[in-house]
Image (cartoon, rainbow, N blue to C red):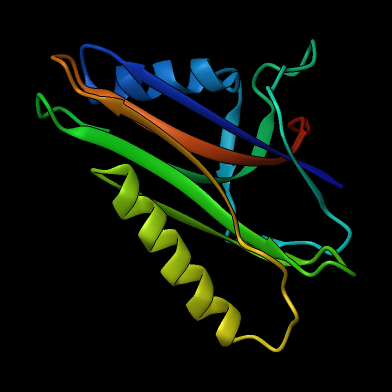
Length: 157
């Protein structure tokens, strides 16, 4: 299984419009997002890449782990980040999804959360990885997001 790590930022006249702009920036605006908890299945391969929706998938379900942060306060920053670790031999692992008003606070929260979660599990996880995105509110509301895209599937009739 391949899991794509993608990110997006956007602004708009409302928080929802900013979220939509961030989804467009990430390339997943045509999907119904299904949020997952933070478990990475065995044999998963994670790749940071641009997401391009295959033709004909408009409206499909898209299974994701997502970090998101919105703000409408002028001058405030919106940062979102995913952190993860995987066992080198099996590929199984965990994601953490955090957000905040500075890149540094999100980095620190990701690291602390991964350390805690790794210590509480009996697995031999590898190094910690992160993907972080941010934007500054200059007037209109803004949204940042980082998404781990698992798979899509159509609705059944």
